[in-house]
Image 1: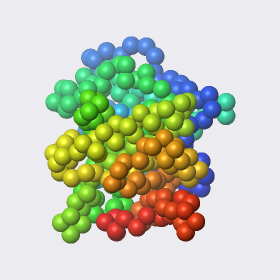
Image 2: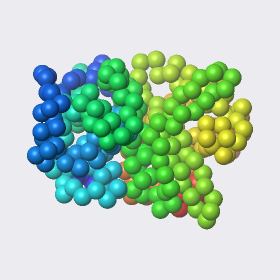
Image 3: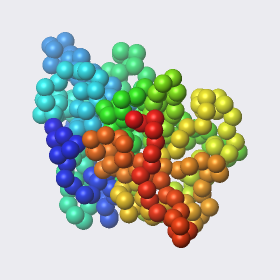
Image 4: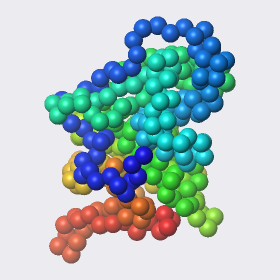
Length: 310
């Protein structure tokens, strides 16, 4: 596997591209449950396959590199990403998982995205593992999938690099009370230092079509949640810290500008920003950015000093 520090690209693999669509790269045809049970009985499908299946179920959409990093963090023994790819191929051929790639005017994407198939849900339920997957989940567009992948990468960065990491939640549910809307953020990380814990909620923003409209809707949900918060809301003892995950530095500035222009700031709440590629830095020390006014009254981006990450 290519280590984070060896990645030289300046464009996030999870950034949107013009005219981008999701393309099927799974297996057509029919596979019976009896064939799959036979493979389990013969040892062709093992506990490691079930570990992979459980991760895909938890994250909904995920790349092979992300699966490999999570397996490593959880201490599951798998020798290389090539070995993992072989196991993923087995699961796809058995229609337990399926996969997609992204296609645009620039050509095919370099990576594949894995998600559940019906047989995968059957196997998870056979082991009493909760699974809410339904076939329509796999019809989600490229923009929603890339938000999920960006959220995954943030979770993985904290899982691997935060010395005070405590836990993660992939799709935390948050209630905007006055709007009567329950929505899901793209990730939640709890970190703890010297007995003090704080929850970080991550919201991924992509340059999709009408992205400003989508941003406005989501930020209004967050404003409702924060302005009407009381301890215990959405299972939070205190207000979580909101962090916006953007495609790149330019997109970060654009997003902040839209938040200010459209009066989407959250009173009393400092907003932090980050980007996909900042998650590849060796430490988390310089991954968060805040916007503050300089002496001339103009906003500028500065590295946030978030001490609890140390």
